[in-house]
Image 1 (cartoon, rainbow, N blue to C red):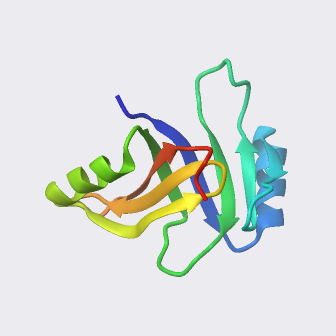
Image 2 (image 1 turned 60 degrees about the horizontal axis):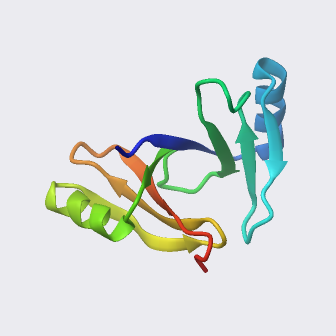
Image 3 (image 1 turned 60 degrees about the vertical axis):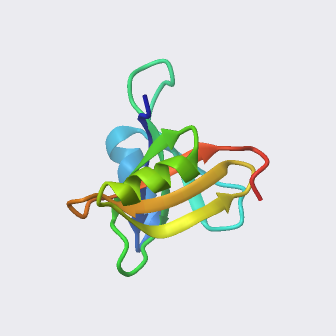
Length: 122
């Protein structure tokens, strides 16, 4: 069954946000070695319940927080989203060396991401 595996926060001031979450919750941040400015968020011990996330720059019209669901086949899930009243708002695209990502709105307008792991994605 597909599960939430990642959250993403999109903010104006990255460094202020990092300082806040480090000081309040002890979270750890690491700059991602990828083609865009993005920080990985480690929220705790991986053997404990919870998920890790990411931090990026705010974009107009894009939510401040987005949850991402791990799926096996992005093309099949995109088809199911559309046939059940959802809308793809950012088409399938590669996250290099990670996988395939798309963003959608459900039938009530809630935005989420779907990610198919594929280390060969380019």
